[in-house]
Image (cartoon, rainbow, N blue to C red):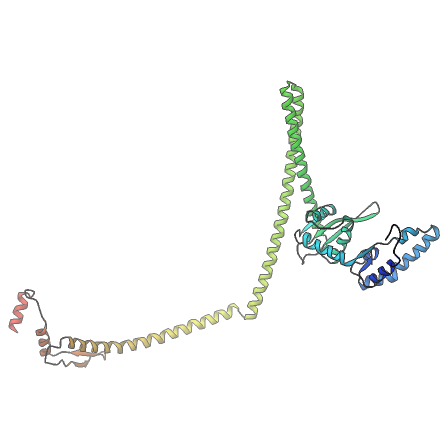
Length: 372
């Protein structure tokens, strides 16, 4: 393009790009960013015929502006999509749950180093709203509609609409910021008046010093009232946030209760069933314990008898210096248990085989041995 000359092939190129859906007119894009069938039907059979009728009526009264009609704004869809993706990645994901003015959103884009011209932020926001990634509130001023508030949802499940609660929270936050600025300004004024009062005291101008001291006291009272108002607003914001967290906890409790009830219902765990099963378990364990006790007692008796016989045999082997063999006599007592009986001569032989140290026997024991 040289000077004001337009290339002859430009119309052909623009027409091909429009057919390939690479570009769209800005007016059409603002009416329907997603290019849906419903919007196409409304534009084709309602809006365009009415617009053409209005143009015929207007141009029958006023003259045509050929230069204005020849100027058409086009939107390259790929470029706009790339810009919206950059805004989503750098701005939306890092600042979820915020409600911002348009100017604050522009500053946020500059802070996050998003390369976008201010004139095209409206188109980007319109595209993000069509994707349900942001919510926009418009405001009419001087017969012109412009973007007023922008809401970034806290998560994907949150509604993208701006509710009254969001507006109330936004107003509280704006009031908080305004009060902070006012307090900073009052503190600077208090300090300035205090410095002037000290200066006039040094110059021995007591009346002027008193004047600035009175002004300082008024400013301090105003500062105290604003501080109290700021405290109340911060308390409200804290209560709202706490209520929101409590609501989240309550929803979690509800979900957990429903899940537990479903698990208990599916598994058949009920109080009556559990009580019956535990009663059966206790009864079965008692029966098993009784059986074990009976079996262990009978086994113990047999084992005791065997152990007693083995001990007698081992004792006989230990005293194995005698020629006489020990022949225990097994009898049965009244309890049907075997008893071992040793005869007198066997007992005397066993006692003779015992070795006793000298001087350890008493006199009575010696007499007993001599008599035997």
